[in-house]
Image (tube, rainbow, N blue to C red; front, top):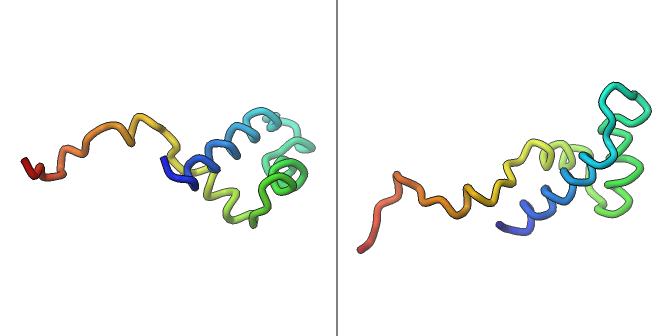
Length: 71
């Protein structure tokens, strides 16, 4: 897992802890502006990209079936 994926996982964990569905005063944009952006400065586009990013560690360990083997 590279640094971008690690940071995306941290941001997703923060959003999961503070986001409350149905409350407009605790929406994802509020979490970004008041919590995430203070600890991890980034633009809002990067924030939304991180939320949409795959951060599964299992994918990294699986072998790609399309990849040819050398030996």
